[in-house]
Length: 147
Image 1 (tube, rainbow, N blue to C red):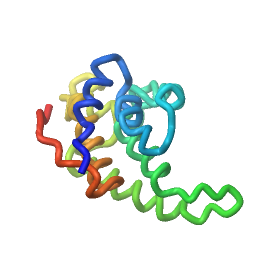
Image 2 (image 1 turned 45 degrees about the vertical axis):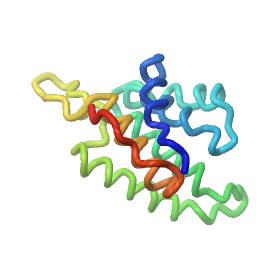
Image 3 (image 1 turned 120 degrees about the vertical axis):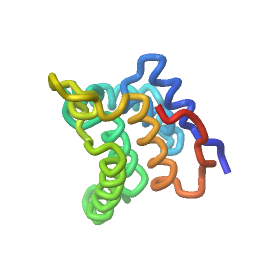
């Protein structure tokens, strides 16, 4: 069993990667993808897609669900419904813990609202779900800061 990569995810974020980049880049080798390409592809998904929309950690989970689940058959996309089901499961789990999947809510961007979760907290939660649900049995359970 491989060690959790959540410390790598946190380290990526501390180096300036956005929340989506921090997660997907930490696991890109699992899909035989190079980090520079993944970094470029996920750049626009930080800060809730640049406008406080869907949280970058949530976007990362959805990207990785597709990478893991899709059969990649362009002319016969039969796996999309099972990927959508995995997306829903991940989003529901994230929402149940954090009470939102929207960056604007999680960071408390609207005046008068308290933040629900820090970015580090969101990326730890997202990476935990990736390790548990997308790569079950592959990684040791992360034991570290909750943020």
